[in-house]
Image (cartoon, rainbow, N blue to C red; front, side, top):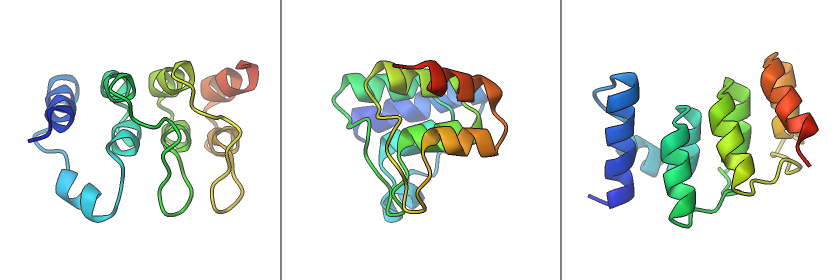
Length: 119
């Protein structure tokens, strides 16, 4: 097993008590590991992947990035980790939405403020 996948699985089990992360399904759907970790709110795993060279702006087929996925789901620490590692908050998905737009739509005020105030 890829060491990064192992780290993500271990982190998920340790922090959330999950018994399984759907890696095969994620890979079949062409979901980058970074985006999958961001969706789950796994800030430590996101940081580890970024420190190993993951592209902070990797996209899904619909144009969404890890930052957009984390912002839409209210994962503040994950959004913060992505921003620290250079994720571009100005990118737009296929529908023209930014991470800010998605956080605003879902009423995640803390993330809206973080994205608004980030330089």
